[in-house]
Length: 375
Image: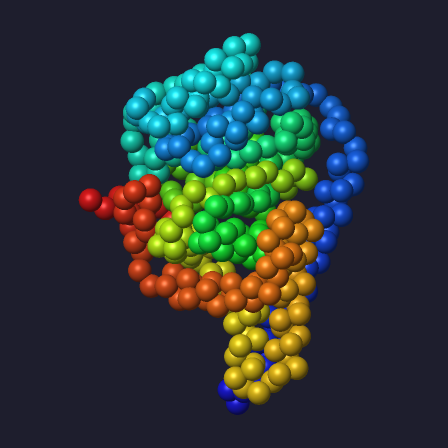
């Protein structure tokens, strides 16, 4: 009976891999078609809000990419909680290098459970324009980023525009996490709209109207939540608008070089998904084909195990390399099923406990997704 259950579960896992592969191919094809056509329509002024804490690897190059946009009018607002933050010199250097571009460094000393949102609360007050764009501090973008990301907002039903991202790292631990992001997390993101999930949004890019932010209660309504990007997209889509996945892929650098840091980061993600998506978290092992391949080997179902491995590697390479151009997804394809074993251990740990490590401190996740800092 157990052997049959493992075989059936393996078949379900193959079905998910096929669905994710289809989602990756659809996005890749649609993105290629969009790139063939230059963005049209109005280009409204944009306020880029960038909360900053600490000097991430590649930070100077990342913010420079924002200052070199092929776009008529925009401003960049950097917010720091402490003017002694190590990222401040790089920001001041950018301001000196681009004196004609409205770039401001804003001191945001206020605190909140979510420190990033605490900074955004202050930046929102200083933003001049009706379109806002928020992305993580270490995000690097192409020159046509702004014009492509803002273009979908011409359609009134579009409430928020988000982007996929490609991660790189210098350490082995960071490269391992980057492989998982490219071959597991990003494909799952592409599956979401394919199966009707509307409230998706990634911290790599969130572009939206200031009026919609005001309608959901501003950043004030998000300050207690761990997944502020998800909460913002969810609340804007609840206004009757939809989330739009751009054809643009941005880049980020994973700075934490240690395995402990990667583990804590992954565990925070897992527990965040658990409290944000509820029952959806319980179904995540279905996506871990490497796990079911191992179990089918142990149960003697060798043919099913081979099918699972082939399906998992095919999907991972398609999502990681074809969609994101993440070269390790191609060269380290044999490791992709092993990621699923790691992911399953993280999933098990995510089921238990509510404590997360957050910005050099600890917090407790509440059942509704809010967090409470721990002393």
